[in-house]
Length: 295
Image 1 (cartoon, rainbow, N blue to C red):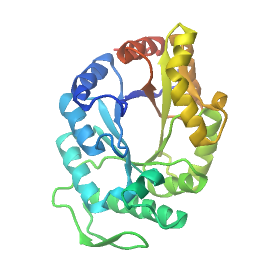
Image 2: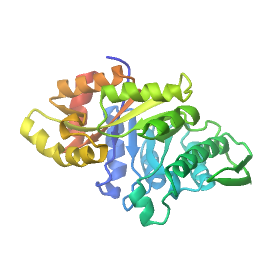
Image 3: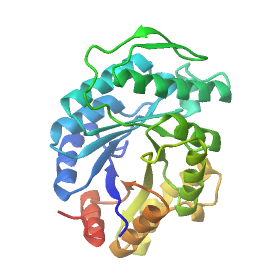
């Protein structure tokens, strides 16, 4: 199988007090990554990452995705630097546009699509520079920093990745980020198109591609369909495509492993499973055994 990291998302609907034990069990299974979510009204991404990192020894933890409109670049860099110093080499920091309906709820909606693009680019650029220990001066369209510098920058800056979907944003990610995160529902053909747009933006050869995927692993086809139905219907509407075109990692373990293989072949460096249905750890164990990556 094409070498690919396999991770799991701690779903936003799962109670936060369950995160430490889940993180420990995910690590024990041999998963490469655990990703936490920052969506308005659910859990804070930085605090959830700190909980997961503190509960584990070596699993990598990703923040997916901190919305740029809600996050001061200076404050976000301070938070990330703290985690990266305490847990070196174990953090991935995702930054995205945010869901604009949610941003409007808190008075943070961008004035225009161009302003939103500028905000994301200036935020990512500033955060990366601060994490490198630079003294940052920015007088951008959306971000203003006047000689800000971290006193305790990390010796090993964490990768800063862009959570984006649209073509111009994918190009932006290739231009300014260490990697790109693609949301649930996107299949191999989508990844090939995304890779082309990221490359068009000027991505370096080590620019990574992380793909979130709805997943339900089991032999009962009706149970799998029921577990995924609400996710698929909702995401189909958001993506503007029919439900049958929403890609999932699902079915018996061998078939689910094949879906992971398809994503890896299309360019995914990391596949993060968003598990639906009962006993997510059992599902994870089954698919890891099927891909031969269980410790």
